[in-house]
Amino acid sequence: MTIPAKKIALLGVFGSGNFGNDASMAAMLQALRRASPHAEIACICPDPRVVARSHGIPAILMSWSGFGAAWFQILNCLLLRVPTRLTNVVRALLHIRRFDLLIIPGTGIFDDFGEGPWSVPFGIFRWCVAAWLCGTRIALVSVGAGPIHHPLSRWFMKSAMRLASYRSFRDGFSRDYMGSIGFDASADPVRPDLAFGLEALAPTPAPAQDGGCVTVGIGLMTYYGWRNDAFAGAAQFERYIGKMVAFTLGLLDSGHQVRLLIGDVNDRIALDALLAYVEAARPDLAPGRIEASPIASLDDVMGVVAGCDVVVATRFHNVVGALALGKPVISVGYAKKNDMLLAGLGLGDFCQHIESLAPDLLMRQFTTLAAGRDGYAALVRLGVTGLRTELKVQESELAMLFLQEAQPATVPAQGAAAI
Image 1 (cartoon, rainbow, N blue to C red):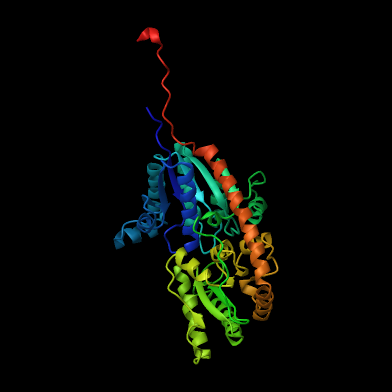
Image 2 (image 1 turned 60 degrees about the vertical axis):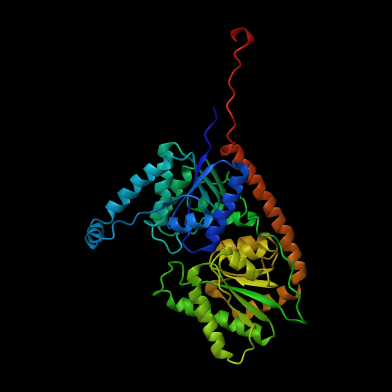
């Protein structure tokens, strides 16, 4: 007789085109397969077909949006979407009861960037409550948290956190933020972002350059403000792109090379806008001075980053990926998570907020970082080694708590006299 293999569900916004989220899931899958090779793993996400195709595991739709028929959609709206919300509660109960463990692996899922309370916040709450009711244990692993602006989103997310058997946060800001909104997380550990544990992410040597030429990776984001409203945030987007164009032109005019990056498929809007402005301003620019390689996955991003000396990025996981490859980074971020990460690796002087970005300061930061890039790269590699070690510690903790591998059951001997 054998003990059944563990059945584990991963919950998150995976398969939706955000390469950073998918990197966190991939890292968690690698850790689970090391700790519990026979575990049966599935994913609960917005696009099950993408995840099943990319990772070869069963996937479950996170939220059912109702029948496509117009009459149903109209009725559902008139009833304040109660039919689909109740249906999704029942779906969660029916699915989660088959699992021993529900893991939310990394990502900044405990904030409400671009989300109303009834989207991802309610989704997290719904699945965690269903797991708790069904006796499925819950682990929140290296999650990011905050800001959470809407009161109902805060309630959903705090309630979901309270149901977890294990919690760790990917930075001190996330843990402290939860404390600031009335959730005591002071006993929970801070562990690095899961993407640092990806086996494929290892430091790469800086490319050889002629003279003072530096290859700069610029990671762009289609940023419309915290609410992510393309209409209300159009002016904010244009200001950001205009400043990044000014910085890019400064790099090109100084003889450097530029490689453009994205962290989400939607960021192609920002990339195309910047490229159009640069080409219009410098129509005679020599081929190869600025490049925008096709990017459809984290592997594509890392392929571009590997050929850069310095990276300037907005998306958190563009920053993480560059650091994991041993590259000095400047952050143009929209949340504290970027600043906390760089500060922990000795790069705290190389951060700006996206909404108060100053191109002149950005150029000065770049000049300083580029001039001392070998020293900063060594500092980054040392720091990342420490982060990987911390993730190994967490992996061991999770294995002890949840992932003891199934072993053959011992049958008591009957004794010689009974034969």
